[in-house]
Length: 309
Length: 309
Image 1 (cartoon, rainbow over the protein chains, first blue to last red):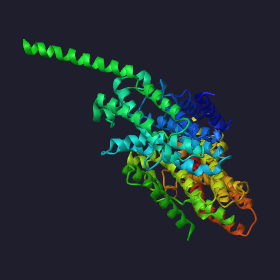
Image 2: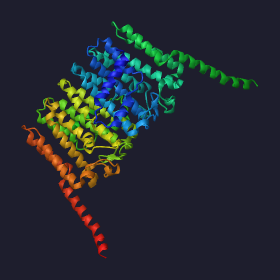
Image 3: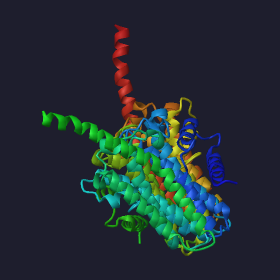
């Protein structure tokens, strides 16, 4: 079974497990809207790939870890889109949850998704219960305080923010959880896989910043220019677009280099390079940079003519 | 150590564990505001009392279960007070979290508290890891879908609601978690303690409805008349005040009767009766009913005179 099929099936099973007739129907619909159809499911894919590389002896637990991480990601999107944060009318190319169901159900759907992540984990611990405390810690720490995605989002309410601390918490933490939980779900040492999550998480955030500036709304599935509009810290403001692309490529190299040696190392490296091309298509970058250069020349031309006249 | 002291200390330790220097300071302050000073801490007290009655062989795990339940309760209060729900400016006699810190930090503080409940549980599972999956299920189910407090709150967005289903989910579920998690944290069968949580949870909700009508803001620590204002289902609308008081008393009797026989049964029953008097002081009920009767007579008097004239 392809990893993406396995993830979609596991998510469907996790949702079905809590959708009993006694559950308020609008909450069920709002939660479904938040989870399906999904994006690239990059975090659970990463979790599965690492578990596979580590010998994956408890696939049900690996599935639960991957699902928990994706549900927490979906929860963060639902709450981030709320009017008091991004006030985003769209997400993944259609109405955001609060736009479709109203704010009360959006707050509650986010809460329910956070809890569902832990319901899913608890239900899958039958075969390897001794792995559960560690898995819970990895996954919960990546979302909560002091440095999970909730803390990352909270940095936006502070007047002084370190870009690295902000991005590592807001985006990187869930990537680290994906690699580390993947390893631990297979009984392997999570520490060996932390650097991969760290590098990919930062690369993903830089890629998001690059695409936000390049205006590729169709790739993002949400409105562009949001960072500038909300005065959020981002890599472009610090490095410029060219510098951000160079930084992105160095992070991808570091990610590939961090992969522990083993029978699956080459395949994992291939996955990292593929994902890098999906995140920041090199052709689109070249096209954007050429357009920007042309615009700069056109804009500069009249100035020179006027000066000459 | 008195149970309330033990609970306050455990809560302080749980918060300190996530308050590292790298955590955004306003989020830390908002979370502290949500947890301290607390209310009566009735749910964690119940958890501790049941664990004690069951022989309590892993006090650290019992503490973690009690803390997790109280943190989830605090999270639900923070989110319930948001402008899109109750829009409550006060809670426990002072500013609500969104009033003091703004909506973004209130949403995030609630999220962080939910996650912290599971961080706390995971960290305490060292001695009895095999109890963790069951404890997580009890506690997560009491908050999430299909019938935890999040589902209870979501019933307010539906046009057709069963009062019992609504109240059982919104309030009862966390009481059931308190008794069942208390038992399981001590290695006992949680099922034997479910009826106690069920009855006390419903009694607590009916008491809240009674006090909401009787206007005892100082007992509630929040604005009164909220159910009528938000057209929420409540026991008074169904039963009238007198009927609600009778119902409350029958629930307390059922709670006391449900306590499994054992060396601590008498003490547990005593606790239930004490709690009942704290929830609905009989003197206040009598005073309110006498006032209501007097007002009805005064209001009726001129009508009779007018008719006679």
